[in-house]
Amino acid sequence: MSRIAYVNGLYVPHRDAGIHVEDRGFQFADGVYEVCEVRGGKLIDARRHLDRLDRSLSELGIRPPMSRAALLVVLRETVRRNLVRDGLVYLQVTRGIARRDHAFPAASTPPSVVVTARAMDFAAMDATAAAGVSVITVPDNRWERVDIKSVGLLPNVLAKQQAKEAGAREAWFVDEAGNITEGSSTNAWIVSAEGALVTRQADMGILRGITRTVLMEVAEAEGLAIEERPFSRAEALRAREAFISSATGVALPVIRIDGHKVGDGTVGPVARRLRARFHDFTEVGS
Ligand code: PMP
Image (cartoon, rainbow, N blue to C red; front, side):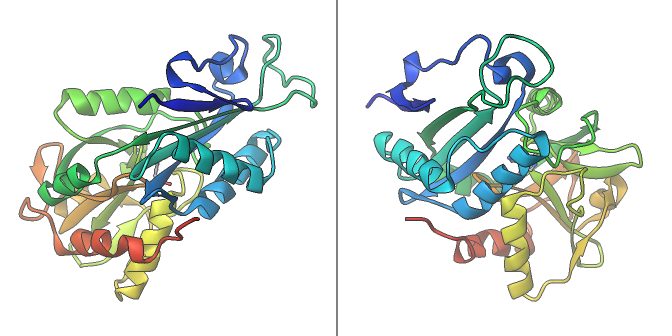
């Protein structure tokens, strides 16, 4: 089966899919994106992802490329054409194609839209979750608007590569105060030594993950005490549990931070339970 990508109004073979050399996404990382889980061929939490897309676009002054209904049609059609049952759909919107100039192009410039979809092995992800993962910590050297889901991800790319070279799954960013903000492509959580579920408040210092939002609903239903506040690397090292969250990984238990065991170094009950109940709380699209 050959993969298909949606590029500016056309469904094209993935291997031939390209954008213009003067697309502002390519030139300036002047664009935003979303990654949505696909399960059983259906989009998971599309409404929340498209709400966040609207917010990212409006923070950057990029106009919505089409109506939400039209965007949903494109997302679903891309999933369908790629025969994805379980996997992800990726959506990117940029400020469009214009002669290279830092300032915005004419307001009439159409935004560019790219959508791709691919299958993933969720059983393998479950096995990863059952085994637990390692993280390393790195200085948070990103700009101060990481609440915007921009495609400007160079610090995240470098951090993830550093994690990979260290044999870890993820890199956790640590801010100047010594607090963990989030991972390079995930939100960061701990179950504190006192037993509270802790994740940083969603200010401009982290991306408000959709998985994070849904996991909070799961935690509330489970009667867990939730604290949205900064937590330090030192507190994380004393924690009972830790985990990372994202649309495709859901909640992956962290069993090592910078080589130190978290708790007894095995997957903890809170992360396991939140992961198990996650899909009871998501919105399943048509
Ligand atoms: N933080 C960052 C920096 C991310 O890139 C992501 C994944 N896009 C997340 C958190 C998790 O967000 P979500 O749960 O919406 O996938």
